[in-house]
Image 1 (tube, rainbow, N blue to C red):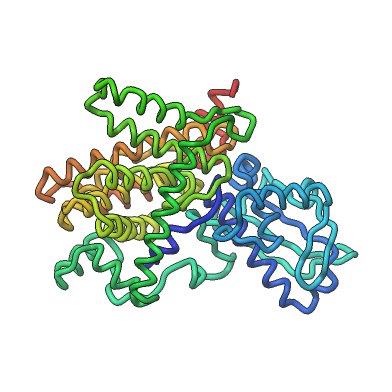
Image 2: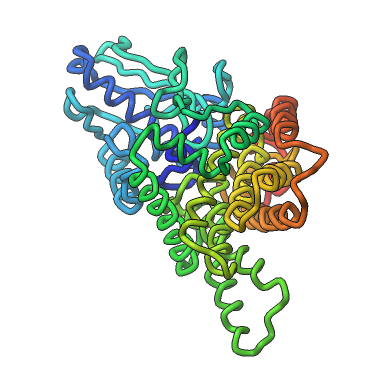
Length: 456
């Protein structure tokens, strides 16, 4: 299984696969280099980005992520403001401190290569680190794949134990098995996931960790609502969450609220998170940065707009969402570079729909139904960010994904859990669709809106 704390990770924007993953991979290479006796001879480090990392890495801050990782920073702990200062310092000084070899010359403009021509087998998001001596001889070299959601795998290895499958007392490989195991043990999906997590860490740590994740999600919404101005990048996109929220608050005293007003707030919550993500702020990967606004927006809808909300319900929400995210990761993909946006916002919608259904008292069959609806109506969605930036259409797309999740939960809760299409069938369809999708529609900015809105 995949741990809740691997699926939901605290980090910085704008991308889990293009920022968080490369930063972690750079950190792993730095650590390996420190233990290499030849590290004292390192005179230069060269980083080569391939595939989607090369095509959209500049818009996704991959260069910054690599520099920070090589400097010893980790996405879970780095302060976003400090990260920007440190990156600028290294770009200006063209010096990099590597453990075991002191400072070495490092010019990101020359030593980080965006290879737009080669595709490396294994995954579209691939980067290679090479440590060279003064004669340009390779002293150490590693290739890493950033496989979505901040998960990384070194080429030739299985998924790292901290980032991949772990043993669980109640294992399941698909939704049918998940429902069967729950029925056999008279457990809810949330209870089963919690029991699996307890095999890894104490229950109190799990609950405290979940509360920490939700606090970061809600804080991100509040920061996004307060912030104004222009997002970084050539598109010059203006933040909207603050203005939208102000307009909603302004009409409250007039009794002019629309019947669908809660959905308007959900739009604001999701947009606020993804504007923070686009600005490189602190977010929770859920299950990716590009889709980071869906689950927080639906969680805040549950907490602030549902009369029966509770802390227990919030915890049940994330535990249940974890099961759905695990199924999608194991049997398809949560990487936009591999499956398109159906694997990011589509999966986030499915997770949020399942979580909300559980929090509102739905049974396991209704939860599975809600998850199925959430993915089904994102099938075929491409990932074509304009300018390689996680802004258009990504920010608005999270708002639509959140509203769809609430609708999916509503439909499932009004039903009896019996439905024609299963969650396993739509996950397999998503996998097949992603495999059939042309590469230009999978986070390369070489198709779709990215080429048909050139004036941006």
